[in-house]
Length: 146
Image (cartoon, rainbow, N blue to C red; front, side, top):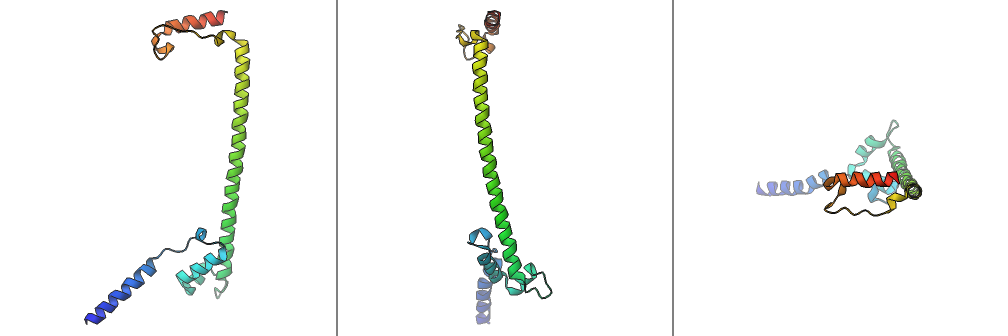
């Protein structure tokens, strides 16, 4: 009786991890055919044929698996390429925006030369608008009237 229990414990110890093992992941394999071969080995032939086969006898399962996996990988590559293209376009748009802002700042400085001077307000602390709002109003009036 003890031998039978020991044998059953050994079988369970070996069979349970194999049954609970995760299915292979396509990114772990170099190509779709190798991935499908690993899935067929991990699931068993009948379960693999049931999952992927589409004809009466399910004998086309391997080809369908390879086709689906290859298409999914190609779509993923296309998405990644599209994201890279979007990033490049966004970078160009950002650069164009910065250039335009710099041009606008130069135009503003040309149109309002009073803003190029530095105005020091005594006892203003960190911000003039918070500590000395009246002094700020006077500075702005002087610049705008000039």
